[in-house]
Length: 55
Image 1 (cartoon, rainbow, N blue to C red):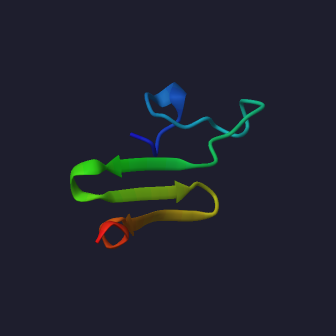
Image 2 (image 1 turned 135 degrees about the vertical axis):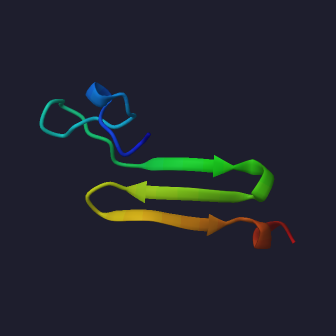
């Protein structure tokens, strides 16, 4: 869903149409203590494991 622009039912601002653009996209999975983060135009989805921080 985050891959698509708002006009196409997604959650991203298209850079050409708005004064602002989507910079960060974050998906949290609390049960698994995991984050997914993406910076469109810079890098794709990266998985961040939080469990080691709580052990």
